[in-house]
Length: 501
Image (cartoon, rainbow, N blue to C red; front, side, top):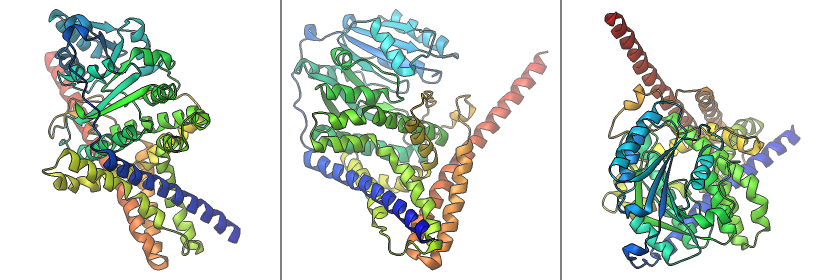
């Protein structure tokens, strides 16, 4: 029994230390941001119209009936010389998105835009494959990429392109994600806080302190020579953006991050959509760690850069560590092996997120930042509650097996709109929801045992229980709403059909 207790204690301490490292690094990035928050890159001179280079805008889409028309119409309003702007709608869709996109492309072409509706007839390589295929059809030196739910402002290219004209080794300019539907529900408001923390604090801190940053998959402009010199788009991970980013920086290409340029996009309004998005990111990031970890360690980078790069690629291990701590707490309580173990790591791990969120909200919303922090509990519960699905995603990333690219559904959501319930794209609850309920019950049982054995553990276990119940409850409620609306639609369709006869 003593041997079992020792083994569990070692695993527990290792997990809490891992959580503490993640939390400490979040605090460190916050300090690095504060240190360099005013170090804005010099604004390049405005080039003459004749000096603006050709730009290819790539729009990779797959089954995006709700947003593809808005995407094409928005890109058609980009303020850039029409003779040097080409748009590719890289459409791998298998539903009526194809017809909607074709009509929108024809309308934009009639208005004078050079735009192509590119169909491969296959999804080989998924998004990376589509981007690579599009590059083969065009030789523009600069390539802008926007996902289906993004709406770049008209002046986007005029703000970004001049930076490439002053630095021949500038390979990428990444801009900040802004939000179209932040106020749709509590879930979107919580996600907005997390995204702001990432794009204001983390990306800025990495860029301005000489650390590796990454292309975020969209809302950025690449130099074609950088893509080609770095080996092009690879599709052996689900995070082709991080993969190419790291290969390019290892080749010596410089990146630029512009937090002052925001591109609005849709935040997933469904809990199951958020879990799918986070799972794909978790799997892809871990795949990049497997693929490039050894290369990073052996590279010319400084020890400091290597450590931060590995922590960046290993960030999603946070969720397996959280689950391990939860699962080990009850047996250690029953064995009496928890009393003298360090618990400070958990508290430290939880400080990084609120600090980053507070800093980012003060930077973006000086007038009402404090009021916006009232939805932080939603972010905290959601971030903890997706630990089940993200742990499974991390394991898939570690497996070395190829994984399918599952898109995050978009609905052109606005305000408090619940139009997602009527869409066939709405995702329904699955096995992860059941597992989340079981984890909530396990955490509640652990809290009950801890009341008499180690009361200091109770708040953590209650937080676990609330987090899993929150994620499972929202998933189940939204799934029920979608089923009810879609069932009503089927009944109305059958009724109208019988009346027609």
